[in-house]
Length: 267
Image (tube, rainbow, N blue to C red; front, side):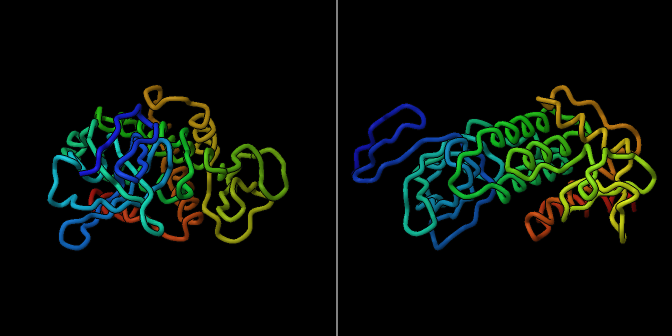
């Protein structure tokens, strides 16, 4: 059996000839592979987005304790073959069980981690995004989150990864946002379009929604969030979801779930 040297979190360790690194990680998805293995999507504190092969994970609950979607814990990663890293072990330190009790919270949690995972470049640390996602999950698990919470996370992710939407001026003419009746949001242009520059059928972004997004951008922690003003959330939500679809070139599965829950609530 290979001998594993115990090192501090994040420090390289030896497993036989294989060097491993321990990092805090959020499990985004788990897919069964072959008879005993699993392929795991992780969003990690030190390596960013990682896809890894967990050999024997379907038969070893000791080495992969609590390995499941939305779990957060300590992951031992080593270089693997091709694009896949090798997940040598995982120990959950945060249980998403509190989210399971409320399907809407579970769907929002899935959306948050999926958005960060899909937008982040592979194997590149994104500590600001990781901190935002963990704070978002903690707030969801605490119950009764503000309607502003997903908008807060979207802005943190977009801003940190270089996709910050322009919210203070028109992206076409450069003038200050006018907050008029025709003010809109252009995903291709990356921000607000004033009424004078609006063309076609761009979705409207009223002044209350734009201002709410700007205020959320300046809020450091989700514990400080207050509900968005009446009528402000829906246009802000549609703008941020549209920007995410544009950047990814697809609709996330978690977004489809959220939209389905919204329709079911209306009927």
